[in-house]
Length: 469
Ligand SMILES: [Zn+2]
Image (cartoon, rainbow, N blue to C red):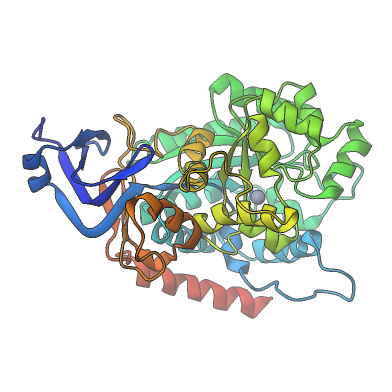
């Protein structure tokens, strides 16, 4: 190797830029960053080899609410004689959220993060809005709960952007909802000082670069406009990622029209919120003008198709968005499933069902182009949205990667040229065998060293939680 501190990693195939290559080693340094590639036979001979595998950059899950892992599959039934919707699901989610102790928040987050790592995710954007005690009392340390989530990520070895959410009200002219007391930070000053305190606490953590902070005004309905704009201005002044739920449900659009006389994206555009730091989570119920303004702002849109179909949110107009400029990334959101490849294929499949067409998001006829576009959304586009140098094997970026077993029945028989399509359209999690974060092996042969303990602690939480509900 060029430098004795460099380590080499090789496999039958390595994803380099836009194709798989053989006979090449990925080189990393002692700080866990990529330094380059080598085709030198000596380097290949001394590299750690993954036989019968392909290695690719780790996936970036831009939008998660880890605590919602606790209600997975517990709401798949009618809750009343009327229609079940996102809004009835939300009440069930609030009930569960209010029963979680700080310890429970840690154990549930570890469970979600374990599953992310096992599915090839190496970075998560955790949109965190549990701040208070269930009755709304502030904890002595207002960052007790976000720190539990950050510690959980550190414990399992996942890179985390903690997107600290601002939430102040049930909605315009809506009566207080006691189920939301845990989320409330009453004003922008308190939100900013709490977030500053969290930034300071995170900077003292041992794993430098493993955790950082972003700003997340929860949604237009949850904040008075002035508060929302203060939070956005703070993110800009401090150069932090800015994430916000937007246009997930038609009712949210109606409420925004009623309060502001504008649709959500129109309102954000008018006040200069749409720029490269901004990520709109969902952006489903958007019209042509709003799509154009998202494009002008060069924003990211985080689609969460597995969660959105579970909640009955609607279909992200990914074709129109991609044609207008916003860059699409993915999130597991409610964590009903944790599989970013599933999100990638559903983004395309939902459009196929809607339009009765195939290959809707393809731009060129070559067979890997569509898969490449979706894979970029699952990696590089997500890295941009979270402001972190990961998502591709480029010198200086973190050595976060995973290895897939080329004989796994879900992808066996593919050629280097078609492999990425196999991964995007058919890979099952059993194919993901080894996962590295910052050059450190976290998952080996499909297992995490703390897996049994994490699962058992989670089962204990579930028993207590669902015994009470
Ligand atoms: Zn969400």
